[in-house]
Image (cartoon, rainbow, N blue to C red; front, side):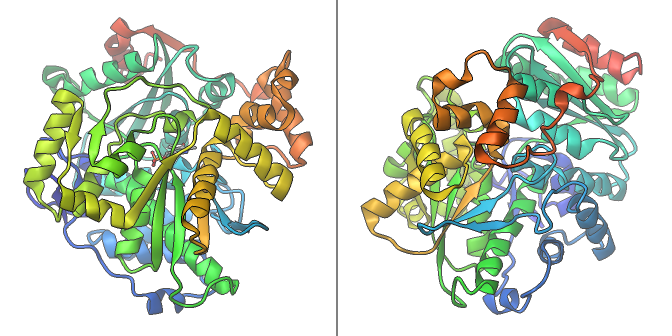
Amino acid sequence: MYISTRGNYNTVSSSEAIKLGMVPSGGLFVPYKLPLFPLKQLLSMQGCSYQELALYLFDLFLEDYPAEEISSCVYKAYNQYNFHHRDIVPLQRLRSGGYIMELWHGPTAAFKDIALQIMPLFLSHALQRLEVEREMVILVATSGDTGKAALEGFKNVPGTKIIVFYPCGGVSKLQELQMLTTDGPNTFVVGIEGNFDDCQSAVKEIFGDCSYNKELASIGYELSSANSINWGRLLPQIVYYFWAYLSLFEKGQIAAGEKINFVVPTGNFGNILAGWYAWSMGLPVNRLLCASNSNNVLTDFFGSGFYDRNRGFIKTRSPSMDILISSNLERFLFEAAARDAEKISSWMIDLQKKGCFQVDGKTLANMQNYIYADFADEADTLETIRETYFSEGYPLDPHSAVGMNVYKKYRHLTGDETKTVIAATASPFKFGESVLEALKGREFLAGKDEFQLLEELGRVINLTIHPGLKDLDKKSVLHQNVSTKMEIKEQLERILNGDV
Ligand SMILES: *Cc1c(COP(=O)(O)O)cnc(C)c1O
C-alpha cells in the first residue's frame, strides 16, 4: 500500500497510486513499508535474466497486480524489439576501474525508456482494475527527451491517448524528427509557438482547470500525466541497481556482500532515488554519488541543507539535467526526515512560496550518510568525454560524462577505492554534436547538419548509429500540428474529436 509524503491522503493500492500519478492535494506516493530483498535471495538468482529479476521485484511492490499481468507487462516492454541489447542493461568494464551501466539501449536512446516502456502498461491494467471507463488522455510538455520516450511507451496502449507539446524551434532537429515520425493511432504531437515554459504552463493550466476537466469527463476523457513523479516510473528503475550488482557478482568482479558505489547523473532525482530504494531493500551499497551539471542546486543542498532554486537557469550540454526543482527529492526527504510528513509539508510550502527551504541538522546528517553530491561544469564535461575516449576508448554522452567527472573528483578527494558503477543515461549518438565537439574540436562541426554529424560520429568512434536515431530524415513526418499557446485547448478538442 502507498501513503502520501505529506500525510494528507488515505492509503491507496499500487493501481491507484499509478493511476493518480501524484497525491491530488499535493505530495507524492511512497510505499507504506519497503519490502526487503535479502542478498542471499538476490545471489540465488544467479544466471537469471533481466526480465526474471524485474518480475520478482515488481511482484514485491504491485500487490494488487496478478502475477501473469506483471509478466505480460515485463515481456511486452523488455524484449529484443524495444531494447537493442539482450541484457537490456549491459555493464561495461573500464580499464582504469569503474563500470559503466548502459541505460540507453531502448527505443529512444536514453534511460527514460526503461521506465516509459513499461509504465503505460502498468497504467493500462490499473485502469481496467479500477474500472475507469473514460479514456485516459496523457498530456506531456517536453523540452526534448521525455516527449519521444512517452510517445513510444504509450503508442498502441489500450485506453490511452498521448499528446505531446513541444516548443517549435526549442528542441534539436533530431529530437523533433524523433517525435514527428512516431506512428500509432493514439499518438499526437503539437508544436507550440513559444518556449518550453509556455508549453509547461499551458499544460499545467489545463490540468488545473476544473470546469474544463468536467467538460472532458462528460465526453468520456480523463487527463493524466506521465511525469517522473509517478510511482510507475520510479519502480522500474529499482531493478537495474540489483541487476548491476548481480552482473558484477556473476562475473567475479565482487565478492558476495561486498559494498559498491553508484554514480548517477541527476536532474529530477528519480534515477538516484531508485538506487536509494534498492539500498534500503538490502542491496550492499557504500555510497550514492549525485552528479549535477552547472545547475548545481542539489550539490549545494547536500552540502548545507539549504535548498535554493532562486538562481539563474543555465542551458548546458546535458539538457536533461537542466532542472532547478528536483521533484522526486521530496520522497528522499520524507525518509531522511524519519517520515515526518509535517516537516515535508512545511518545506514544500516554503519551496513553492519562497523558492527555498532549510532542513534541520538531523535530516541533513541522514542525507549525507547516503549521498555524496558534486557537479561538473561545461569545460569539465567536454574534457571528461575527451579523456575517457582517448584513455579508455569509451564514448560517453555529456550527461554520463558529468557522472564520470564527479566520480573522478570524488575518488581523488576521498581515496575511496570501492568498486563503482557509473550510470550512462544516454547514448553518445543522442548528443552527438557535443561528443564530436569534445573529440574533434568545435571547428569540426561547422557546416555539417545533424545527420552528417551522426554519420561522422559513427566513423570517429567506430560504432553503428543507435537504431532509434538512424535514418530519421528518411522516415515520413506523421504529425504536423502547430498551435499558439492561446489555442492549446482548441487544439486538444480537435484531437479528441478526431478532427486531426
Ligand atoms: C532524465 C535524464 C537524466 C536525469 O534523471 P533524473 O531521474 O531526472 O534525475 C539524466 N540523463 C538523461 C540523459 C536523462 O534523459
